[in-house]
Length: 247
Image (cartoon, rainbow, N blue to C red; front, side):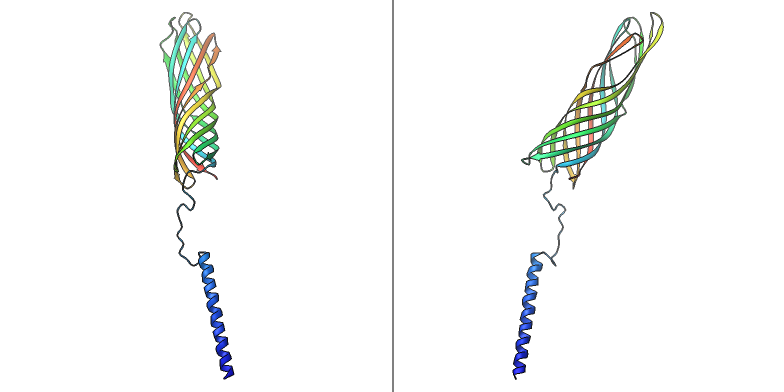
């Protein structure tokens, strides 16, 4: 009889212990979300534009305007359009302030295929000129102030300075001599860059951006064979880029 009672008490105690353990385990599982259906959100953190370090690639179109003054026995003024595709890489760091204002710094390197051959009818002495202009590589530094238009779109300005290598060859015939002459100018020219653009979230750490830039290059002069050739160059540039935010 006593053994039966003891057995019942032991069994009841064991059942109570198992029940309490199971209940505690259930609470622990519930608190840790174990054994619960897991629904993975495509954007576990608040979706939106990211700041920090970034890298990217871009491509677009260059439309240079080259204003020239040629003198040497006579004078001639020309304005040439030098156009072509351009592409390159960039890297930078950007930071949002008050979840609205943005400030970034960026370095870039581009290579342009813009080139043009121009034949002039001649100056006031009847001389004729053939001008070949090629645009090569560009590298630059910029700051990018901007504002967050919404969680997915950033509007920004570009304020920077670029260095571009230009190659030009001027050949002609002086009808008063007559004589053939040539002058070349292979020079890296610096200029101020001002632009406006937008970046939109494409998903995850990726973004796409588009921008327009206008670059004013410093005046420069090439002399050779008794010819003075002065240049005033500007560029209208349209770019489309793909951005990856590292952090």
